[in-house]
Amino acid sequence: MPGSDAVYRDERVAAGQRLPALLGAVVRLRDTPCWLVPALTFGAICLDSALVSDLNTIAPIFSSGLFLLLAFRRFAGVPRSALTATQEVAPRLALWRIFAFMALHVAIIGTALAWSDAFRANHTPNQALLLAASKYLIFLPTIVLLPGAMWRSFGRLYRAEAVAAAIALVSFYPLRIFTMAWPWYGQVLGRSVYALSHLIIPSTHYVPTLTPTLLGPQLDVTIVFGCGGLQGIKLFQILFALLLVVDWKGLNRRKALPAYLGGLGAMLAANVIRITLLFVLGNTSLQNRVIEYHLTAGWMLFTLAFIAYLIPVYPWLMKGPAETA
Image (cartoon, rainbow, N blue to C red; front, side):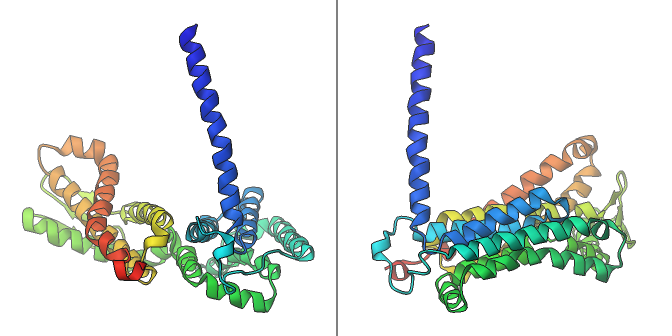
């Protein structure tokens, strides 16, 4: 059929355009100084996590991937001939260092498989914290890829990217932090929702249990751990990371951390508003609709909160004309 032939030709043209684009991206990545170090680290961490479920922690993958993308974005479009002597870091890695790096990762995989029962046993809070921290040893093999003097040059070159990756490493999807903080954070969240709800529904009562409960005339709302705003935090972190990757070359990097911390606070505040709206609207004729759609509405509210936060912060976060010059 003529229509089918035309579609087939269009698909072949599109496929033919993708391959040069992919090859171009690989070439641009190779123009990134010392690109093999973050690339090997990211690939090895992904492989370790895929082979050993006990090492499947998303923060190291997210952190190493973010570092690689930020480094790539920083030098995208900059020819190697334009790099200064300081930026020309370790153009090649010694073969023995790559083999040592791979051997250490094999050792990590073997150790994790041998100690799998220890990871899955019951532990005290301190033991669980130590075991969780031990998963970050997955970064240690990267040290052998460069000599000490080269690491100092690497650190000077990629200082901003390393800070961003480190913050992502310790703060991405902070489930354990939320779990430890829930006894007091849950009360702060519950009392904040109560204070707002009481302004609209004076008959509201508050029950300060581990899972705070708001008693209303038609609907009672219990704030469980899943209502703590962790999903909103995760959404913000993913969207903010995308913003960093896309606009990294044009950002004022010193303002990125305050903007990030402010965004986390904005998401927590949005969660208070979300639960307040759920309680207030649930005590009206919209009760059934609220119960049915409150999860979807929550994601929509978090997305709107991110947009509302970004509108005033984004111009402040970008470099001015004097900084760009």
